[in-house]
Length: 373
Image (cartoon, rainbow, N blue to C red; front, side, top):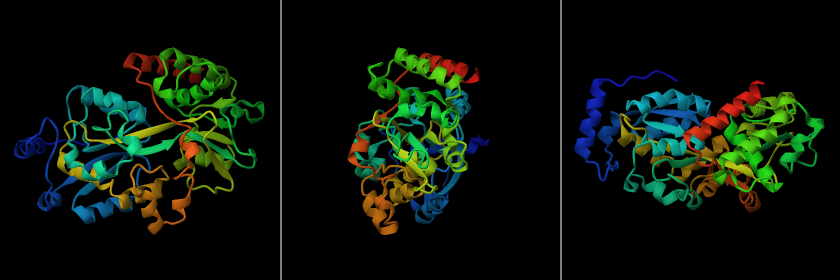
């Protein structure tokens, strides 16, 4: 993570801002002015490849707000570990907006590490956020943004009829050529759906018990130890599928968006796939929450959401995206990687389950022991 220090003047400015604007019920509800915009710089802790840098420049042109865009989140676990000590100590973390992995949303929200937001300060969010995302937990404080499944990217030359089931990855014929994710949560969610379809566990990922998670890990253990399944591969699936290191990998659509679709396919297995709903939030101690709110809300204008989806091939998080894409990138408006059919959407399951810190640590320890031998 890049280092960034708050000066005493910036802290004082934040206090004066809150005092002058007023805090309604503990929520930021701050009118924005052109004069303030001209003086504003916000720091965004973003995922790798989060957006088109041209959109950052366009935001500044339209609002006057400068965005210090930092792609510092390549691994959600590492980023969380890097900011947790500051949050715990009640210190600012150096960012005004952060991307929050779906697996950590509840932890951020329930520990009071995010600023509560007044809906009146986010009119585009209120108007355009997909109805299906409005009901996800903590959507009022951590705004749904990235939305996509972790399905299966695969080599079409090997899987000529496509991939229909997670179980096909257990075929000895593909041993050593199948990539899992590096972290346990996604793997547990995905393979939990496979075991649920086999009648071996009862719950979908968002409701999975700790005992069921441990059962999924126990199921995966012999396949990892034998080399059938390779951990820590899916994040770089595109490159490894291209060079032949892998013939299938767990991956979101964005990881293969630049590959030839005639050579590399993407599938949501018949048992289903986990879907992440990553968020945008304003961390406690943010230096310029007023500008941060304007930045978040800007992404929920349909033309801006369309530009985001055009660049990332994530599923739309806002209404009006397809219509906007038809104007700027007509071919993408018909791309099933962005607009999958209804039967695919029906097979997506949000994750993770609301395990507490102790339970998460137990899952992580077990996973680490499995992949380290």
